[in-house]
Length: 187
Image 1 (tube, helix red, strand yellow):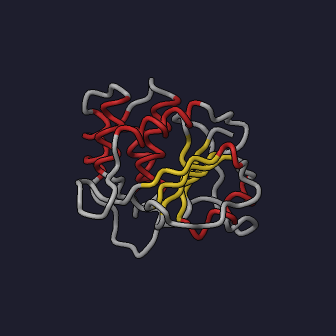
Image 2 (image 1 turned 120 degrees about the vertical axis):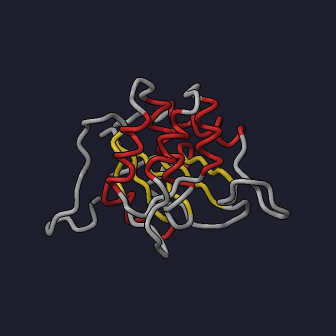
């Protein structure tokens, strides 16, 4: 069950129930209120208050090292018996970046370019937040490889919002796909 669910805010309850998730990372603006799904363990919910920006702007909170350190520490405590939800407002930038960082924190031997390609294959829309990727690359000792890999997949297709995707933590791990019988899966 080692897969990460990336979704937008308005999909978290449905995603948690459908996939049996019990742990979640929320990357939202500071003081943005929302209802945590009851199936998510309150003690295993990490809320990171940051805006989807890559440089400082007045009144907004850019991602910083403390945010990414908290993400990495939380991810390393994930029991992996059920999938982990990582979401942001639209599921396009902050949460895909956090998913890539999480996958590398848990399985550091994997190739960054293959990980970026799995992320792109899961969604044509993702455009991981550059600042989160830069910090994650540094804290995980990737020597610029994660940055280059994410740049190599390029900007995602234009979209108003993303859709739920599944990202295997390790290359070759199975992830659920949408079927007519299970249309709310991933894919």
